[in-house]
Image 1: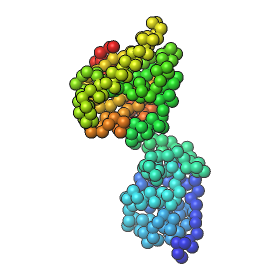
Image 2: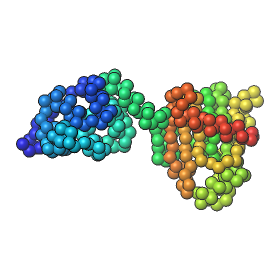
Image 3: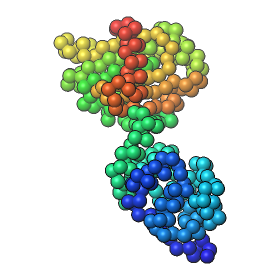
Image 4: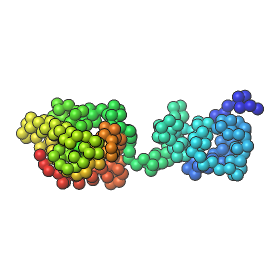
Length: 304
């Protein structure tokens, strides 16, 4: 029978949740996955092959144990052909077909709680507490604009170069309102007259003083916002400078969210990637790595 005339078959959603299937997925045991699918659906090896893009002979060899599937491309094709829900793909250690991430449950497919729990464990192990990654800062701010990050915040700690996310992309009036509403801010700028900022200018191929001038502008703007606050709440905005080789911008919001923007050699800051990290554990994960880095930088800073 030709592949065009081969009848279609559907794998019932409940098949992906039993322990036997979970063990096969976790072990990437395609032979056992095929056996379980055939046992449940009574599909022939020929029709199974048509669905997953393999010949009947290849399916027979896989089921018989003489051929083992190790190619990610083939596994992805099999997962697609069998219409695996996202959670099953996660246990198989496959991402979505388009971008390599583990997506939410496929529309119309309800995963069992056991499968969902195992998928969550796999996701946590692979990605720790990283919630999203953007290839550039501009793509990050398009997806997560500053007002969505900072409005209503109760605590903001930031260390970086010029802190444009707060000083250029977030209005002074909003910054003042944060403090007036009780928020505490600690803002640490790279010293505009220091050696580290000149080193970064050389890395980016900029004229001496370019980044320093921008940092002075941002620093003066924040100090102006602070000085306009009522005297009894001005200490809610703390400002300092430091002079160390710049490798990352760190923004911590409400003791729960971290925005980490790396600096890459010979690339402008705006072209560098951004990680969004959500605190998940008391003393583990990347959130605490960046929080500790901020604390160390702040402790060596010079108050302004």
